[in-house]
Image 1 (cartoon, rainbow, N blue to C red):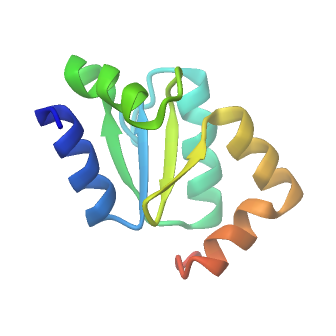
Image 2: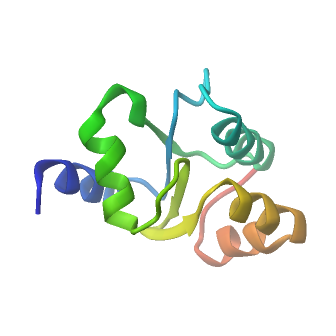
Image 3: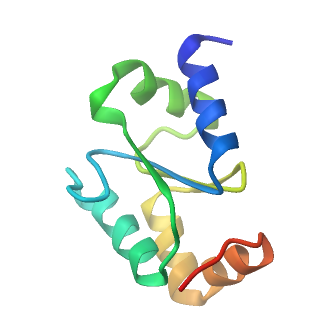
Length: 108
């Protein structure tokens, strides 16, 4: 496992919810990342943001780790959930809220 893969794995293991994104939660640098941040913030879910623009190894490494070609990527309790479109659809149907509840992730 590469150093980037190890760092990704360790980050996912250390936090209940992790969002690999372009920019930070406070300053998203792409519209897709911004949508997922707004959803998580709306739900009051605490999460760890990882700015892939700050580290090219992480930027490519997370794509390889999940076998998913785009950013953002959301993980809940170690499980890859998906990118912006999937998270938005899950939120709109209530499936995301159910998943978070079933995984024991506290939300406001």
